[in-house]
Length: 317
Image (cartoon, rainbow, N blue to C red):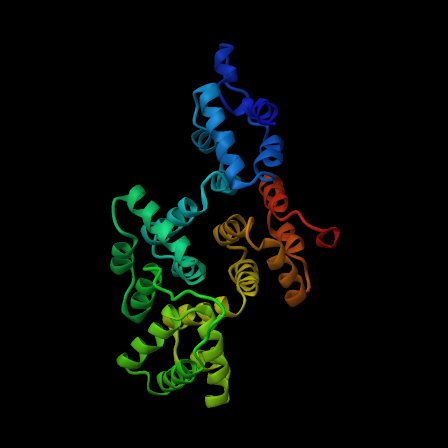
């Protein structure tokens, strides 16, 4: 399999130079066919064999031969998940301005093990701890909550929930939505960023009983800005990550005029996890399929690459 695929990839390597002429133009259709339809582990193997066979780094070749958003997709597919997330976080903080939406999306949704891997790659790649950059590029309780999430300190465990603790947490959450002091904000973010998903489920049910409100509604009514957005993202991820990412895709497409980087990031990062569920939820909630909405805004090989990642049932088309 790899030998055949490498022959298809050969036009982007040194084939032309070996023949004493300018390297051939990339066959973008073959790139899409191969790289979008393989797992990340398979792509890493292909990249290693490519390097061993032709003495060229595949990622470097993709960066040099491709351009614009199509390049972002194809290069992004070649990164292991933690490497991809680490680079997205770095770009969010060290690019032009700070992309708080990216910080919220990644740090609110990743598991402890994923966070640990991101931290390791971030330090290795950029020579500084992730938390150090978060501390310098953000501020206030938004920064504090991000710092907790970046520690990967969420409690884990299945099959046991403490009902008494859930009732206590619900009371604290309600008080934090009423008083909004610094101390209450600290308690609010500690609960939402450290309790297990199972424990938070119970706390949210208790919150409804105590306050008569849904926790998302209460947070949105009591807080604003990035701190509010982060807390709401955590709640949405606790309840249903697929629904959260469907919502993020919809807002990226319609509220931000097709925010390319967000669409690319979500499709790549969720492609081997829950993208099929995200697509199904997207269509149920917003009417159009994700594929239909992508085709309205993307074109050419960029569109083809996104569509190939999204490949699903005929109802998508």
